[in-house]
Length: 83
Image 1 (cartoon, rainbow, N blue to C red):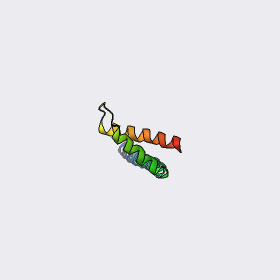
Image 2 (image 1 turned 45 degrees about the horizontal axis):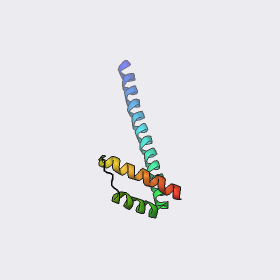
Image 3 (image 1 turned 90 degrees about the horizontal axis):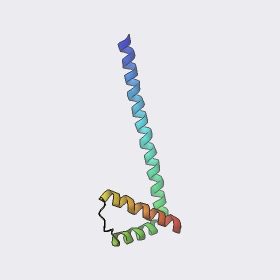
Image 4 (image 1 turned 90 degrees about the vertical axis):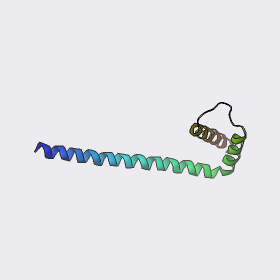
């Protein structure tokens, strides 16, 4: 009897993990959709800002990924301020 209860708990834990994973994935997709919509509203500003960032490459070497994230954040703030 105990073995059967353990199996049920294990299966329910697996299902709960899958549901949590799906919820997190959907949340991230919604957040990314909102960001894409923001970029669409200020497309020209983002394009101009990105071109300026390419010209003004920083002298300190930060990783490629963090460089992209940093450029996005700077352009995002600048374009939202300028409206």
